[in-house]
Image (cartoon, rainbow, N blue to C red):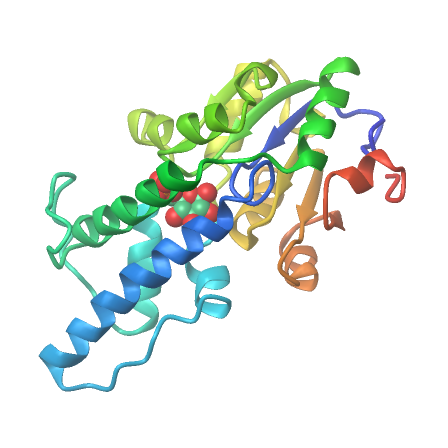
Length: 250
Ligand SMILES: O=P(O)(O)OC[C@H]1O[C@@H](O)[C@H](O)[C@@H](O)[C@@H]1O
């Protein structure tokens, strides 16, 4: 049904890059934030300034992970370890939370200025899933998930939300760990084997594989289909529409 195996009863959708085109906004906010940080770090240490690579660095170290994990993971790849700091750190503080807060300021400004449109294919898929009686959750690492879902007009189509706020409250490990997807399946009343994960990030399909979910749909809008397959996707499509067309029957 809907390009999914017959035993699937629920769909667990990632948000940024799967339901909405906001992966691009996150990526740009990270690039601006990390480049500011790296320039300052180069001045302070006398080391050369090597900018953040919005393709490789983003896809491997940042995409799909909770905000602070993204900061730690990318900076570790450059041999930089920062003190953790605290949630209220000002945006120019050289701590994990300070850098994360700076990125969030840039992101929120962009989202408020430009709004959020859903991907049309994803909107169609959500409606089709609802009509077919499939249960539906959004599972995002983003603490901005609720606002983005609302701005895209998808709130009523998603029965459960597990996001960056939930993860903090429930002390869940972020993607690539499967914890947030497992909680969403539990809240929908299905077993992991009965749920399909929809993900555009390497960390996200890896979480789908780690949780032994019934099916993992990789959504590739940036040319990383091979990496999605290698890390856990059972099928890769460039838009959820393709599953409706039956071009990728499971
Ligand atoms: O900073 P936020 O809004 O809590 O989002 C955390 C992460 O959420 C994910 O959905 C994005 O892929 C990442 O780029 C982002 O860093």
